Length: 541
Image 1 (cartoon, helix red, strand yellow):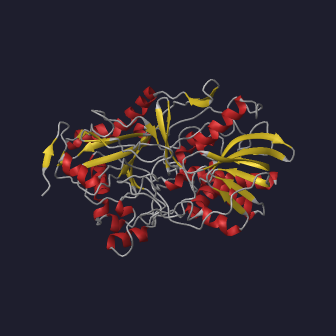
Image 2 (tube, rainbow, N blue to C red):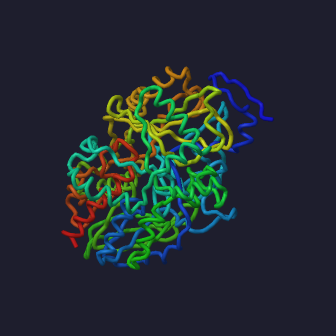
Image 3 (cartoon, rainbow, N blue to C red):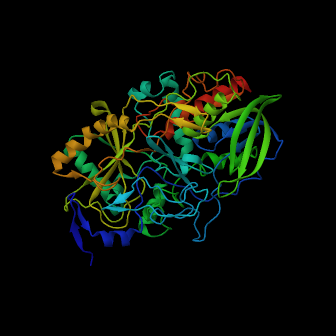
């Protein structure tokens, strides 16, 4: 029998000992997910290769770019700093389970850095071997930025919430882009290619796996907040089969933070599958771009090949007629800032590195009453949001805590309206790029999130959890899952992502978006890349 205990924060549930034995290690959270096995990547790029188009990164922007170039008859090479993620580990699965992180879980760390770091007074991070794992917890002054590492980029580690922002909010997201073309053409194209779909409402209302979300919906309704079902890129038929016990469990086994082995439609199952089918694209995993300089025939790109402990084992110089920066908001911004400051690309304009934001991310948990259990079985794929954007500047996803036991907790990741934007700069003394984010800026996001959760707590007679992010700490204000900006559209680039001053250099990822998409960002990143590459192919090739 499981004993219960009432803790200082008012939480009543399993004892600390039984909880820790039941979970091994709490997953930490939210809006993250995974992918399934695919064919092995082709032979890596050769030293002294000459290519028509080089794409740096294999996430949403890079995958869109590579597919459309290949379909237009252009040969493309993609370089990816992370691994291919196409080979099972000792347990027979490609990705590690969320509650038992191993070397596959984190990028070049010797200790995990889970978004949710504590539970009931216990720190839950653990020592792991250093390895080119799937989730990068990149630390800057004031903020930790979570990013996917591998072929498929962020699609490997997000929760798959595929949200198109409301049209009335679009001017705040991309003010220089025509909303008609986005909503008539590029958002529909992105959603179709990504395989976006909605949960079957009747199943949502009855399955044990979404009891936690139904509790979240009930609390939102009772406080008069609009709630919405959120589309995702999970295979909902597969999830229903998981619940029926007829296929291997994936979302219902809590797979989210370090990859999803079966049901999630990552880029490997959508754009990258089509990329491989063109026969025109080669992908080189464990390759990191360190320099891009003008050269005869376009640009000389210096690339380090890495081993699985992150050490360079070869250096290659490649000539590319055109180069597309798609290393993610942080990766692209850091590389461009370094190239400008060190004289490789000195004519990049002064907007490079500016306009970076965290999509207003802040996390919190609420301790529910015993009559509101959230369920021992929780699907790792969130599918419900609370929309208080118009009144309070916050959109909150009702997030899972799939620990395998009852927690009596509701957990949320909020996206909030915040004016704060940081800048990347080159630190010559340290030989690295810094970010001037200030944790104090998160107070704006906390206040926006409180417009939802203070009201719900008051209505329900509940309190905030204080044991998830440290000791007596309510808000997860130390991180972001949604880095955006750093090479903002129509500022660092023209209105289609061409870098100012360097014909043939382009930005095609989330660094183009100035800091916030008001919802989860990957559909907007994908749609913007579709818009931009269509124009670039028509005019520049």
